[in-house]
Length: 134
Image 1 (tube, rainbow, N blue to C red):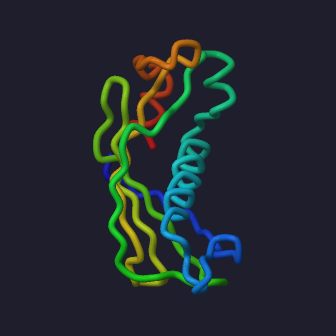
Image 2 (tube, rainbow, N blue to C red):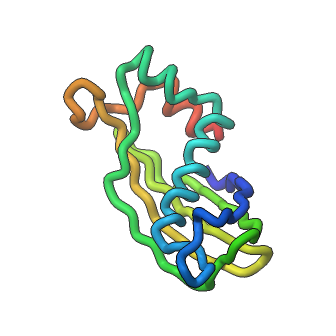
């Protein structure tokens, strides 16, 4: 699974702090959007997953390093690569760039859960297959 998915995001006023710089926690929101769009591009509808498999995704862990600030109106490019696809989890490597400048990078582990019990469960086979193909 070496392919890298990219998704553009514009920095809006609501994304910035009093100094006009992207508020640090908003990178987690940006990375969430990229994962959602990656799923959509892979043909995995989260509403369909809920309806047919009673399953969903939750973030188990996230580590993030900040390198350079983004500011109002910047267009940033988010990247995502699957580092490891487990039986019930996916480990992502995610980065945010403004042009060639690395702004932030994160390692995010997402688990698949049964929505009724919110307990870990295996990825549905059709979902794991689409993730491997993405």
